Image (cartoon, rainbow, N blue to C red; front, top):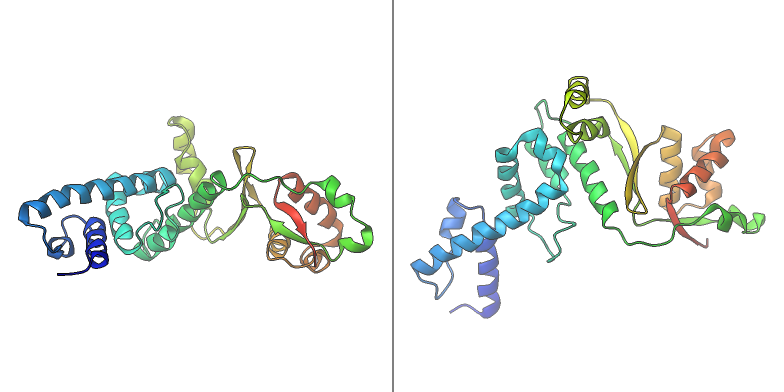
Length: 260
């Protein structure tokens, strides 16, 4: 007779195994008869469907791009190898982008992983902790002699993405309301191989997806990594540094300062 912990782990494996697979059929739990295993399959279907629904809500553009049947198959495979580790499913899906990219490496949907990365960043921003952002007035009140040593902290709702494909254009076109405008946008898409740098941020409940040039992205990344302001400024031309930093603060990129 196996221990309670072993029984619980076996039950978890049985519930998360892909329905209809040999692995799912082979799983047996001590003390559970054949009718019991048949009833367990019903619960398995419910569990998989619930977690799949969470992925569908988090990755609506991916769902539209690949279709419901294929999405469900990919979701079941992903759930089997990377099941949720918490009861709250709002933020489930970390790693789904890498999984999709590995599953579809040589297809016309090579940009699918980047679209999924953008969608997960949007989900993270939507559910990020609501905290006050550092504003320009607070920064300006610092003694000038101390500003160079300033280190900024990333706002929980900010996510920087360096993508190899034009995921933002795909995401916007796919999720646009149905009609002629959406069809024209989809027909005009040439997403593959068009790199882009994005900042995803939640401003008072509204998601902003901002396109950054190479210098702006490097500057933001340096600040997010905690480099002192005087060092981060090396990433951007002097004539645009002040304006760019002001833009970041207006967009709510950072929270209370961190001392050197």
